Image 1 (cartoon, rainbow, N blue to C red):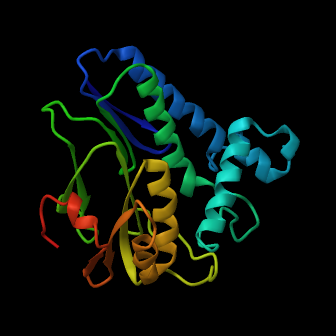
Image 2: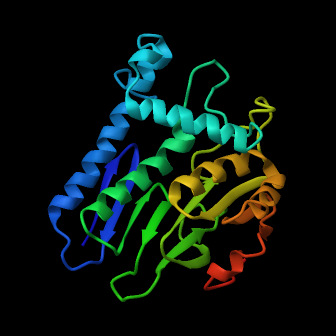
Amino acid sequence: MKETRLLMGMGITVEISDSSATKEIFDEVFSYFKYVDEKFSTYKNTSEISRVNSGELSEEFWSKDMKEVFALAEETKKLTDGYFDIIRADGTYDPSGLVKGWAIFNAAEIIKRAGFENFYVEAGGDIEARGKNGDGEDWKVGIRDPFDKEKKIIVKVISVSDIGIATSGTYVLGQHIYNPHARDRRITEIVSFTVVGPNIYEADRFATAAFAMGREGIRFIENLPGFEGYMIDKDGIATETSGFKGYVLNNNL
């Protein structure tokens, strides 16, 4: 079974290849994403993060999930030498660089606890893949050509199982990622950065930080145990970590 719904301002897709999949598990997963959106959306004045930013909600009254996300953000900031930072230029908080991957991972855990082994959860291009697809093979994931405005060209296809894949870039949302060490400087030297990691939460947070590092991001991922990366620069030149080719099914770029 496979279903896509529009939530959190993006298409979210869940596919479960186990024959015992039912509508109820899909409803539960999508309800969770709705909950996350209501809590962490910076575009909704009623969300918990908006109430935190407005000063309406002091830390002692934060929810368990809010405290967890802030703790994870602080941990990520330290692990990336400050290249991941949820504090915006105006002093407010925007944890979206971490929340999406965190939510996808938690959604995958909901499916796992329900007894399913073969599935994937995808939101905005970031994926948690578990087990096998309907053909009994590893899941196939395409990396898009960031210069293709029609969004049809795939430059790499990777084969994955029990792993997370996240891509950060400016080709869809524009300059929404910034370098916390030089907030006024646009990141223009690279356009796409894909990270494969042990799960989507880990891949997502480090993909965001690596992109903020610019060209040096690929070196950071190379030296990060358990992770591989694939970076495309403004001239269309790709650079990959030493172990990335182990996932690749084709080589177009």
